[in-house]
Length: 113
Image (tube, rainbow, N blue to C red; front, top):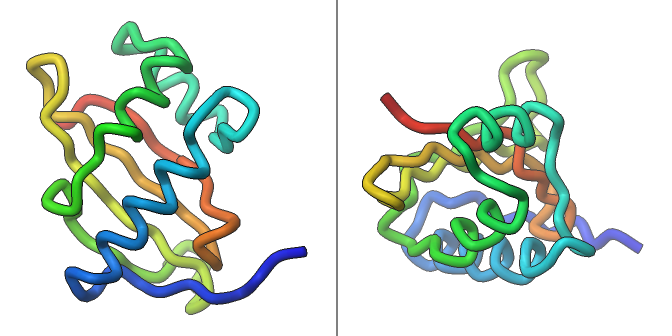
């Protein structure tokens, strides 16, 4: 059952909610929901899937950059939340996508240059 109650990250309160939900959803290998792009991106900078989990667990509301609806193809129900977190002497770029806080997927994980 999927509850469709996505709150976009436009206020400080919803940023905290998204960070908290990400920590729960990406707490271990069994709950990890990522794309092949994320796997390739993490491997390219020497990160394992366990490292990806550690980075997501370290996210703070101040790492939030922006939230926007999908625009390729346009979909006002699909949100993309972007974070940049300083980690291991790099700035890491993470993008989550989903229609609700329950169905989020990590779609991008790479070094921000």
